[in-house]
Length: 144
Length: 150
Image (cartoon, rainbow over all chains, first blue to last red):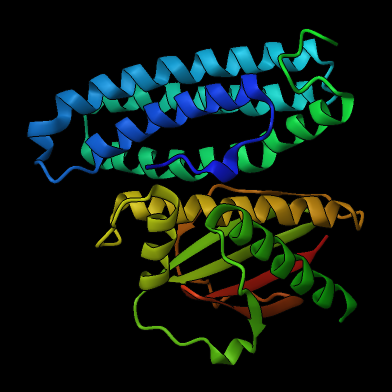
């Protein structure tokens, strides 16, 4: 299981989305790392990849909206981190399709995504939570 | 000498912070560089540009690399394959990014290049050279810092 309770930030709306995001990435990792041969699992990898990509974009958008609602001062910098990651995901996806679904590319992508996501949630997103808690808007961001 | 000490301290602090935050490691300590011993390792180079130029080589023993990815993923990794190499490379990237933030506090503005699997280039000369061995419960990590100013 990828999710750990220590990743909880204390901001319910963000925590719920993070749990969902980790579940999607977890499903992708489990498929990617299963013992089946690449030929056997490539279709399922592609399906979970698409499913996960969709949610990453959706989550980033929702999280950015939340940051704006609470007046988070690091909004622009955080948005840039998100857009850089989305660009990376799109670039790898395009390269992966062009390569005819090369396993090496996807294994490399999975490894980077794992470490990136943990650092992003545990470090970058913690700053949003610290701000929300300090301002007393950690519930849903609508009471700002 | 002061600059080398500052660099050493920044890398040590950033590595400790990242290991605590991402891997739940608490028993992290600096050991003499000479104490690092390893037969199979991942050598990951992070290029540095800006006020400081050069590279930092992170040496992660295979056993340490596998443990790191096991902790993060909750899955048992049994070989240092493309997935593990990429995850460990990203950790080197994250540590280096944290070092940049610490250096910016000393008015040193630098940027980093994407991680590359590479042994150090011993033909180049560096005025700022230092190394540290960071010991943890899942093994040691060696940092070989090779930089020039300006």
